[in-house]
Length: 116
Length: 112
Image (tube, rainbow over all chains, first blue to last red; front, side, top):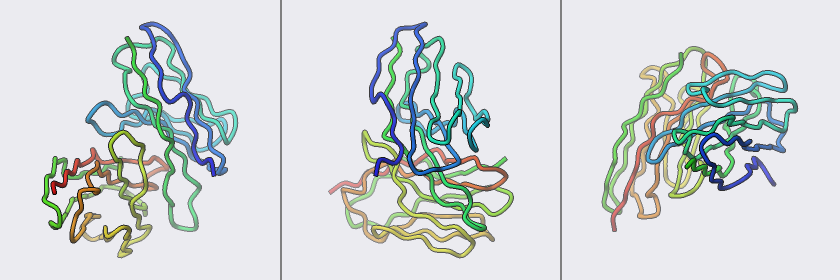
């Protein structure tokens, strides 16, 4: 049972470098989310997606890009890394509504990113 | 838009004390409500959920009831343990859209 898999687990970037945080889910979930969690803080939504080809901005999208070419994958791209992007990044997925009810989202273990 | 407000803490209790963490929400439609727990250095795990009004979610001695009339989903446990020390997040899904909305989290520390 893989669930939601994020890679890498840890990464150190230099200012101005770029990278892609990978997120894959094997549960055939429609909805996927990217959050960041700064030290001692709550979760802030970066981007989310209802399915392949559809993405929406969350609270803090600036400095990030996403794509959703398949149901399984939802990569997050940092183009010009800045120290303010030092954070732990969590990817999550959830299935479509079951009748009138929404079931829970499943989370990956996170990617700890440091920008120096 | 949808929002979740929870007491931010930190909350410090002695072992076997009673725990309440308040959570209220604002949403249109019929969202599902969740409590997630995050242990130090780990990701988020679902603790319990309720998908419609008056449902009670329960797990590991924790309980929360979906109260539509007061738009609340307070987390309770009758007797906390040191191992319950963690950050607890209240969340909703499926209000005005499919966005998963979190409260700011409550840090709970339980002392022996």
